[in-house]
Image (cartoon, rainbow over all chains, first blue to last red; front, side, top):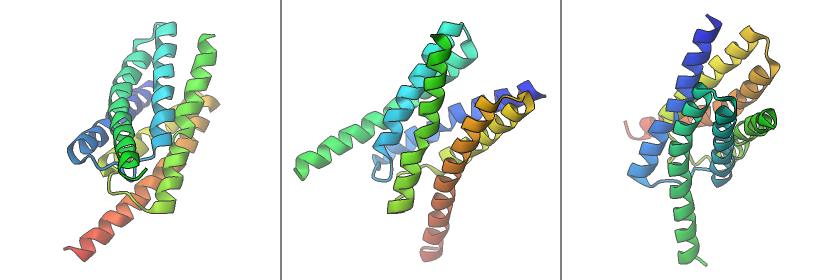
Length: 90
Length: 90
């Protein structure tokens, strides 16, 4: 029962970034998105990925590898928009 | 070394939601924020919290308990704004 909760939890926190990434790609609306959050979070999941690899634990590295992809998409879109904003209003 | 990476990873993915929550509270700008993401993510971290409690593992339940608080703040702000939008444009 305990492990079952863990698996469901891992799937939910991993897939949750999919709708955000699709919304961000579709609308390019990142004004309400925190750059600091996605910088810190993306580094964090990449470290989780490294931790999973170091343990040889596929559950940890697969879940965090997938999350890192979607989190990076959101981060890159935010950075591009932030750079674009700065060029228009230097 | 491996465990050290895990601790740093856990701290980063936990604290990353703090700047997003503060930005959301300050600006109330949630147009680019995905409601689906925060619904799925908040349920996910609450299940991680329950999993940590069931294992008696404070690292899991403390990290996810803190994340659940900040994630809920963002979710509640998004839901309130979505409801407000619907009332203005029914």
